[in-house]
Length: 324
Image (cartoon, rainbow, N blue to C red):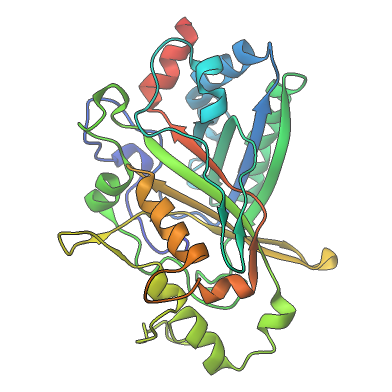
């Protein structure tokens, strides 16, 4: 559940995409504010959803035009259940499927509905708020809001458990190669797969642990963020190595969120990948354990209450939706 606020230094308009298609701002600049919207489209609402997606880039420009320093951006994804209805007879991304729920020995990764994902980022929360307001307004009456989360950066890129997030995120060209589909699925090159999960933390139980115990769970020091040799820790379980010995990566863009008055403290986890099998394998390791380790110990303090997989088409693909 790590975040990318300390990672990518590539601006959205400078992404190096492994195709002629222009990618959405998946590999974006670090943001201090974010809004995540997940919606399901009602029968008959598909034309309105198509129009919104086709004109999304223009809408983002309009809202953010007077405030370029705010670096407003938005990534839109489409879920497996809504793909055919929204996109029409254009085929499907090769690896698009519904989020697979996981039932582990102690923890569950639930699957929840979602036809549309909007991931808004900016350096100012008011810009995210203004764009989210326009998106919801345009979908009013034709889509049902399933989840809305307002995220924020917390101190020096820490989560609400007090640890730095996003240390191992890829940067630059490696980030684009990690997140963006290439020649393996040429009809959808420049796109990406996005997995989202909303985690709620039991901060009260977590804070009862001594710092050394917390560090054992995470696998890093709390003050200095130095990686520790802790087999079975969160850092260890989420390190995935391929048959070639190379580490298999994802591009994380998670953000903290919360409402202290409601006792709500959480992390909105979002991972972009050119192949959803990579983050799904990480989740299986987290929730089911491996031959060498049990489930991720962070799950004793963090509950996943949502789970959905989306495909993020290229900007050009979204624009072509208007013709349908």
